[in-house]
Every structure is written in C-alpha cells, then in structure tokens.
Length: 235
Image (cartoon, rainbow, N blue to C red; front, side):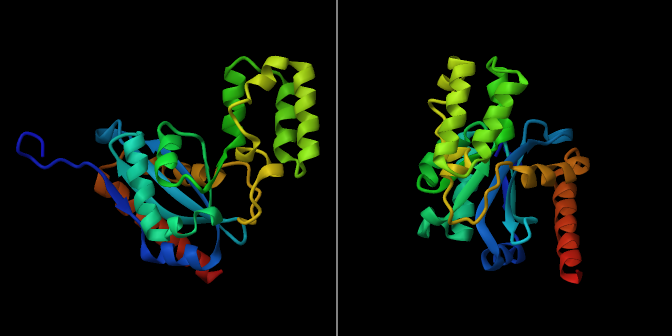
C-alpha cells in the first residue's frame, strides 16, 4: 500500500504444463537471466528461468516481474522456483547457468548453495576484457581453456596465459574453473553448455512487448509460450 492505494510490487508465474514438461523430459540444467522493462514500469525487471530439452532447444519454466535486480528479488524468485521443481530435495543433481547478475550469487549462497553454478563464458570474457586484458591471443586462450574436457589440457592453456600476461592469470584466482570450464563441470546434467544463449533468446523474443502495460506484456508472453508449445507438439 502506498498512500492508501494498492501498487504493483511483483508477480511470479510458472505454468503447470511448462513445469511438468520440464520435470518429465528435460535435463537438470536451468538458465536464469534478467532484463529491464520499459514504458511505465521503468526500473522493474523481468527475470526468467529456461531449461534445455533433449534436442538442446528452449524449454520455458517460469518468469517473474520484480521491482529491481537485487539479492532480495533473486532470492524470492529462486525460492519459488525451488518450491515448484523441488530442487532442494536433491541439490547436487542440478546445474544453473547465469551471467552473474547483480545480487544473484549472494541469493544462490542463501537458497541453493549446493547446486552447480556455471557462468556464461561470453560475459566472463567481456568482464576480462573490461579489466584491460584485451587482444585476440588472450581471448583465444580463455575460450580454449573453457572448451577443453580434461584438466591437464586446461592447465596447459592457463600456463600459456601466464606466460603471455601474468596479471591475466591472477584475474582468475577468485573465479574457479568449476564455474566456466568443461573440464571441471559435473557430468550429471549431461550438458556442456558454456553460454546462457537460451535465456537471451527468450528475452530477445520479448523485446517488442517489454514496453507494454504490465498485463498486456504478461498476456503476450502467455500467448507466445502457448503457441510455441503447440508448434512443438505438431512437429
């Protein structure tokens, strides 16, 4: 309540068909992401959770509209997602991938400490470059270290990075390879994805409705998801 009037705060939606379909036939890996809303609800965020099916295609799980990208809002979103998917019953079986959004890592520490958490390598490289480690040589080494599937190969590439620029290697001290290199990923998810592309694809699809009134936007998302599921069934 604000000045005696009800004001919109936040909303979480997880359609039963999406939840049941994900639990019944998709891999235990979830991409989470957030994007800004425009129009009258400037400052608010659309947070999404997207799964990966057996054909490496997008499987929508849930989405929420919150007042901002904060630890508290991510914590609220992850709590509801946990209730729907029962993640906390076997946290070691699950993997999340994200772009390390503001407040998200602290929310994971509170809600889902034991789940595997990957970082999108594209965003990792962008942060690496913003710290002054540009150039094609360093970029190539980073991507090779991320793509290899054995630990000896990983350390070989990191040694090359140290010879090229010792400061670049120090930048990775607080970024364990378990979060961004295939050589250290858990094999339970049966997925070696390095990018959070599916969430970004979902956000791009919704670009034209993110400036609409809140109910118009939510209805547009519902219609898009329903139409996509229908097309998949027909195929």
